[in-house]
Length: 130
Image 1 (cartoon, rainbow, N blue to C red):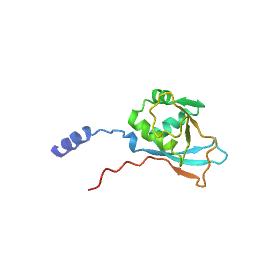
Image 2: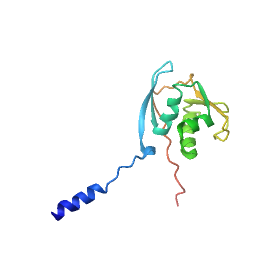
Image 3: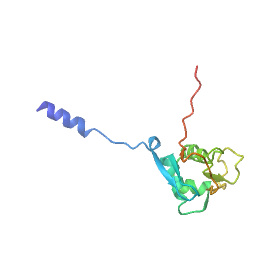
Image 4: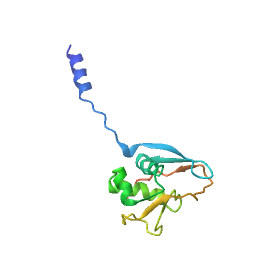
């Protein structure tokens, strides 16, 4: 009896928490001449899915529609705007930040790559190693 009550107590105290920034998924980009498989995190997928309904959006509009925190938004979008991948084109590509809320973002319809699979998940920055 004691063992059964203890197990029920342990089971009842368990909680499942979703940790969105640890998830990843594979999307297929079908708007290009060639189909690409994009490996993205949940936040990137959320932003990319906005472009199913809109041709272009400002940074402010993307933040409002997705409700993603500023830090996670910047990390995710900057990887998509990176000159090496450039899935999303920024109106001012020379600036490596998203400080201007009126900066326009749009899908890069000229994207080309030799690799069909594109890993766009941002890697965590390593701190100083001593």
